[in-house]
Image (cartoon, rainbow, N blue to C red; front, side, top):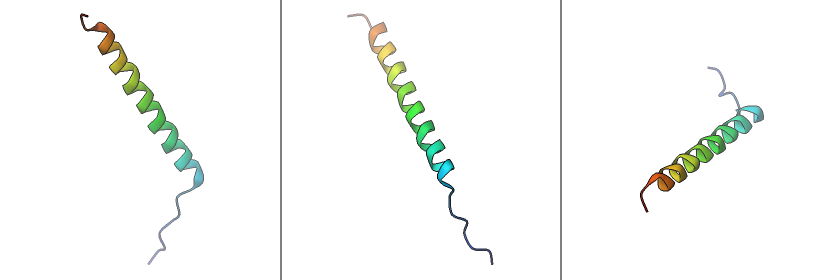
Length: 39
């Protein structure tokens, strides 16, 4: 039986960066949608 490998710190940093990137992308898309709506 192999022991469960620990997650290297690099992958967690990468995961955090991707989450932040997706979050900013969602914010920008939502903002553009709001600005496109007729006042």
